[in-house]
Length: 383
Image 1 (cartoon, one colour):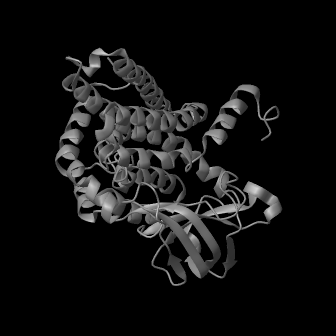
Image 2: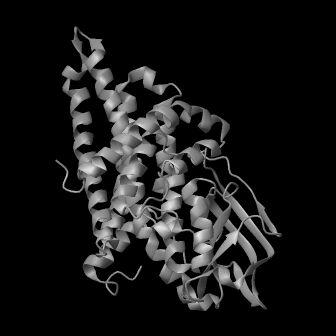
Image 3: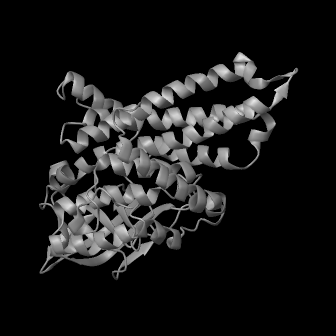
């Protein structure tokens, strides 16, 4: 029994798993090889209501809540973690636009996002700053009825594939820190934008790269939130995405464990299934325990969000623990397959996909600092 998942959410998860098993899972190795995001499949997901279901009905969503989005997210990730970035980006950017964009702009873009015909990205990281997220150099200056952008963003998921991006830029001085940062929705087909793609270990279907802005003019009505307050206002949305990331990676660990148990029960050595040997079964049992506990923490975080209760601390716990745990669990599963696990295939791809989440979207060190500040107070943990 799960206290966070009722009968309706259970039925939703079963529905999505059937779709993901049939349509998403069969091509995930090919998408990793070709590094091509399947836009047709993305549209199918949109037609079935599997993208941004928690968004308001007025903006193309279904108003189902964060837990429903989490249930869908983990089932897509179970089939292909890289493709599930579609769900992650839609939920993160969707709630930001719904809360901070002009209503007509939010509606125009989010209807396309939920239909699976548009992909939005988050452009925060810059070459000179990763974990120091407010240390931005990208300039955003008001010129008449436009903002003009000059600078670079790097390590951006879907950099070369996104149709628009939420760009964080500096409107105040560098000394202002986070108080001088604004957020802007930028269509990626505007003149002056160029994009590159990196050759990453994993998450290759969605990709990662740099975005360069050279005198890019964006209408002022594309501002998100208030000028010079975009960082503080918009960054709150990352608590949500951190819980979703936890479910995303744990779903990959869960299916890997299921495969490892099945293999261990069938593979025989010394006249018995290798699952009879504690050296094989006990490590898997330990990871089963930890994965189940971590998943409950992620669901609890979404439950708190749905009730507008504080969840920053819980979200940070999800983000540092789940990616490390999932990576270690899949690694153990790979070892359980012996020499066969060392072949290129689902297990090694899953490990590569998960590894990126130990780096991006908030490192473990930053997340632990967030938790420490919640416990001891910011003055006691200044860095």
